[in-house]
Image (cartoon, rainbow, N blue to C red; front, side, top):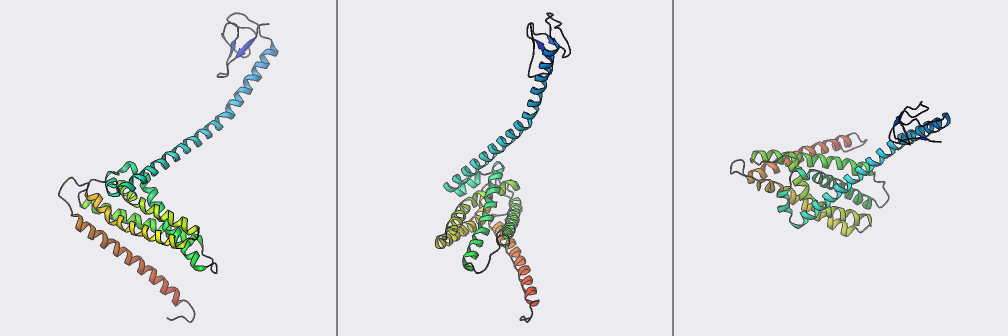
Length: 279
């Protein structure tokens, strides 16, 4: 007996003889007259419904797999870009930072975030080593809190230098300043990473040595940033880099003073509340 078949891609059935479209409830093909018994029609309808159900179940799985694949691809691309970003900076920090712009914003953010984290983490390792296990050093208060404070400091520093760059008549965006500062900090991040690694291995001498090298390089980066921005000037107008550096250091010194005064006052208040204290 001639049978009728259906396609996976559609709810409509098709004749296996002439290929004409057939209604699901039809007993005969309207094109060639081929017959279709009720049992065959039921089998085809059940098969069609099963295929629909399987297709609907596959859609969310395929979508999830596609999203995971896209996310993995993006992470690989970002990692590759950051590795290239760091390796190029090692070759010629000042020259490369001049070429860095908004397109390197993500890599700059990563470098600055890693800088803040590693500095906090190294202090945690130092405090843990100094306590010799007699005092439980809390991870959150000695890592995450300083981490956020350092991030705030870096953000303020970048904002100050961005404002000075505008006074110097430098055509640069805030994202661009973040990227440039991140490129200059990439070398410091590498030394802080090695310092953290040696600290975890309890090689404290090497860890401390690398930590101070990283701090020194970070201090150089804070100075070089303005010179990098000044190198992009296309006019002789605007604030001179010498005065820009003076304003930057003065502004950050005032911020340091206000922060440390706030911390000192809080410590004094805590001491005053201690029974039989000095005050």
